Length: 335
Image 1 (cartoon, rainbow, N blue to C red):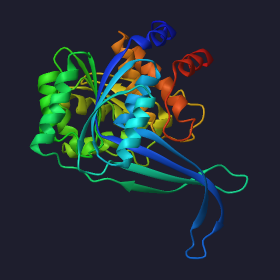
Image 2 (image 1 turned 120 degrees about the horizontal axis):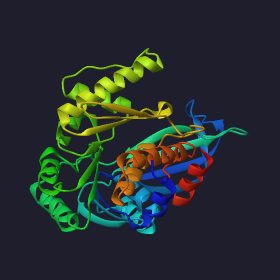
Image 3 (image 1 turned 90 degrees about the horizontal axis):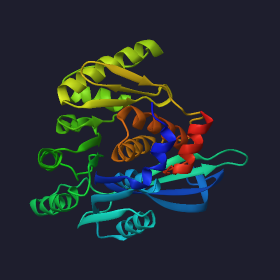
Image 4 (image 1 turned 60 degrees about the vertical axis):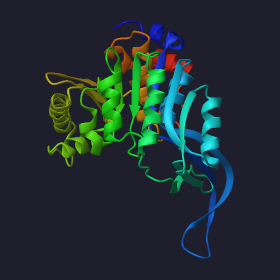
């Protein structure tokens, strides 16, 4: 393994194009010390409201937080949440090529409450936004944006949340016409498994991988299995998915680490997390770190080691957060 710290020091030279479902993550935090007289639910006395890029926007923000150049292409609505999202991406130095339509910008509002002397807990989540269906004109604009930005980048990330930005014909066009000579990393949605054939690397969680296998007519389960038996299932499933999709599979497993599979072999990477507080955005951090590392010439093995450290940092924080180069370097020194 090469010096991982030297790779991180080169991150500012990185260049990554991100395409996918962009959304706004809103957090409402407050005190929950009493119940409502109207229903048996807590009353939240709001202390703080924050906004952050979510979905593909969080992947892009993570890449930009490393000092790398990142262009993001996605669809938003011409509304208040879309304005906030655009501002937050600008604040994080992401070059956002937005395609705007009449739909509502996808927004996830998470309400967290803390009773006296206790840490915050999730109370509920409120979602805004339609699952858009792109018309021919919107598809033309989206593919035009991809075509105009594509030549500047050797690493492309597809961030699919099944919100309508990446229908099968759009994604197949991107893979067919824009992947030649480039590395394409896909953060997948299980029901779209067949869309990703021919990508370089697909990065599902174990639950997403099981869903992908099901979508392709294969059945796997991890229920009531020992760690050793679960890992055997992961490897068997990863190899089969790799063969079916002509791509490498990096299956993330939370506290159990992550496993890289191709059709013939597999390699497991134990977790670097010391404490798991909030898994929000951990998958985005893995994708962003691998993409940035590969864009500066790192091997896939080294990129995954760095991503493992980044995920360990993110799960120890609350909310949608990014990792800095300094944090990554510190993690490398400590472990």
